[in-house]
Length: 201
Image 1 (cartoon, one colour):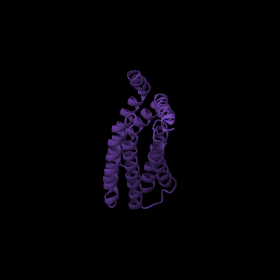
Image 2: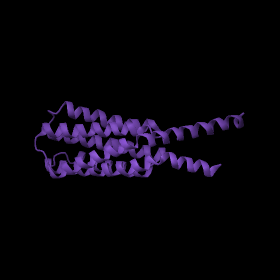
Image 3: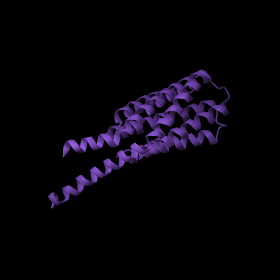
Image 4: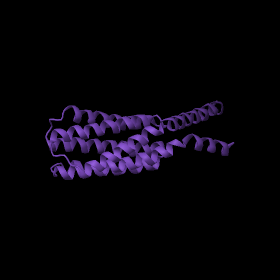
């Protein structure tokens, strides 16, 4: 009986991998666009700091919302979609909190922002290590870097606005570069899957 079930199990794994590769090949440009926007946003944060807490909350909130949406789109290309979706939801929800409630004091804004970066980074790292789908190494590196920057922001919420924005800008730049690299990896996912399947025949 176990032998009779084995082909079905193998087929299910192959179908899942093909579906993930098709989604990756179809929506790779979303990650590319998100990467370009994140890169530009990070550079702007580093060189054009804002001092009004209200504006800071809205800007950081919008960035988190964009990051969350990009992560949700990218989750369609992940074989283990649960963890990938969780990463996007965490960023999206905390981003909305900042964007819609910008009256928070600067210290609380920094803590929420750092927590979003930290939680998103941890989930992204764990998802990449479990998933091992296309571009998982880059996603793991991005997750580790994001988690580290998140810890730095949360543990130093009393830093000056310029420092918080500088760290946030660096995080956005790194995220943008990683997303751009992952997008090109996603673009060729279907071709690589076809090549792998050809070699196993």
